Length: 204
Image 1: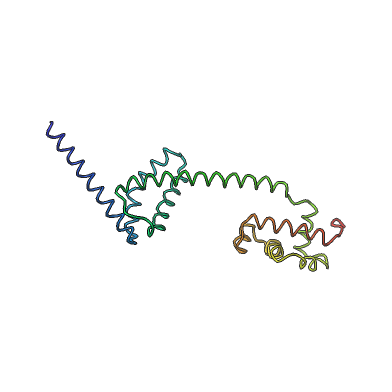
Image 2: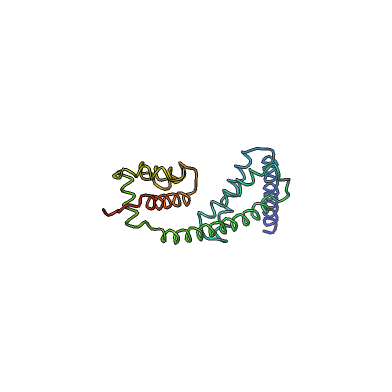
């Protein structure tokens, strides 16, 4: 019985040493631009890191994204990394730092989106402005085109895509290569400028 325990202990030590040497070999290959080594390390540590991350922050998508970010960063910075003795410790430490950083960034984005949503409530289009939109769509007023041409280029492009072509704000954002917040601003300012420029009775 005692001999069996000793044998089992020796086998565990041997496996740990083999695992340790395997990690070092994969790390060295990774530093030499071997993408397969990166893939092998990713597959080896994905589940352990996932379980560890869920214990720290029980949000699966965030944890999964953080694992992806960790290995992307390692590959991206491989030319500036050096040999390390304990690969597993490095991965766990780096992952923990990445996870909390990603969580903080997500929190900031959520707070920013919440503030923006509140701001947009104050920018709801009035009935009068909606009538201007209809004028743009149907071009009922002879001087509308002239007023439209008075807008700056960004406002003109956003308004054209929105009202003449029916694109969503997300689509306009992609077409113009700007943030969606900028599209909202362009549209809002274009409507306000048209309302002022036309100076017509919108209910007449």
